[in-house]
Length: 506
Ligand SMILES: *[C@@H]1O[C@H](CO)[C@@H](O)[C@H](O)[C@H]1NC(C)=O
Ligand SMILES: *[C@@H]1O[C@H](CO)[C@@H](O)[C@H](O)[C@H]1NC(C)=O
Ligand SMILES: *[C@@H]1O[C@H](CO)[C@@H](O)[C@H](O)[C@H]1NC(C)=O
Image (cartoon, rainbow, N blue to C red; front, top):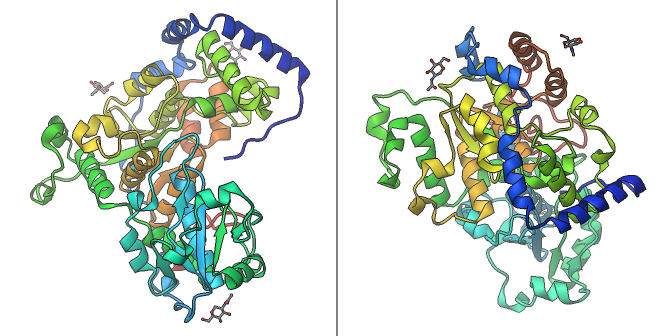
């Protein structure tokens, strides 16, 4: 992910330097100060919260909220994904190195297949780089079902798990140590198919191999041949499935959300046969809330999240350390940022949004989240509103989580899987996971609520708004944000907006 920075801003730099000096001088005391300050931090929206907790939510049409999306006249269809045939002769091996977290890599894999197709090349299973933030070294095979991947695409392109012995020299280390003729380093962002035939095909023809790095976002979404677009869709929506143990854990979590009595004994382990129960009991509905509220995001947004002086200092210090204080948003006041909808919602604000939409304390909520800045305390209001809130930890035993523990990509994969199986998905933060799931759920016509950040920013600024007015504004402002298909516009991603490229009219 790239961050925009502004040029020098002497005044704020000087202020931040002072803050930094202060932090250094009191570095021993600050963690304690921080947590005390944290506990005493007041709700920013105590009036709304009081009424929301009192349950002033006359459920007008609760069925409306949970009902599936009405038919929109579009389907993922068979002909869309019919393969266009494998080239007779391979032009060489295409090796791709992918940066980013799970979902960025996912898009990179789809594009890698497309580029291999454009070049008639044999694709080597892409190499996933270790992300500096997430620090997960899981390989493609450890995340995705590689045999399924190869099988689904077998009529479209040739794929090998590893390079043959004669090309074994082509490694990450080889490219890191010097300039190499077989490495393509200059692929422009959103390059055309022609760019690849002009610049990469000659390398394949001369050397029998080409290695592209960096590759993320290096294939255009516009003016691509139809069969290439459809192939990208086929990779994303059909070829990429998670490894069996991720799917099994995901299924177990989904089952425990739908049949909560099974939660009472999390040590039971993975139960495989729920079929007898399903014939008698209607599964309960649940919402997945994707919440990304980590320190990185909080600091980058430069908003005030109500954590008091200590939090402000901690975030300013982080901005200084990571971006030398040059964060675009820091030139605006908190109020300006909020009215423009540029502040990530806090867990409390997300809770108020959900309550206003009509969810109540009987709603089962699954929290898809990596780390919440501020921890337990920051989540307390959300939990008060939604006491039936679960996550990976609360639903699965230690043994069940052993294989994914500490592995950011696998943890994200489990959340992705559960999110795809929820009745409603709400993403409170923009980003790659949001885009990937919004796209995948649109493709399957599943309900997804997209928060109207501009509206919510303004509503939250108005401190004396009544709960009834707030509710009405929220409901009206989200009428067309329940997952209705939106056609892709130029420059937009086919992975976020799968219609019309990946879908056909019914
Ligand atoms: C949910 O809210 C209602 C009304 O405010 C209350 O009577 C009930 O005890 C609450 N249930 C839970 C599980 O907190
Ligand atoms: C790939 O192969 C097809 C035939 O299978 C051919 O029409 C096309 O020109 C080839 N493309 C390249 C870039 O070699
Ligand atoms: C809030 O209420 C005060 C007095 O009750 C009033 O003066 C002010 O204009 C109100 N603010 C908004 C944004 O409605």
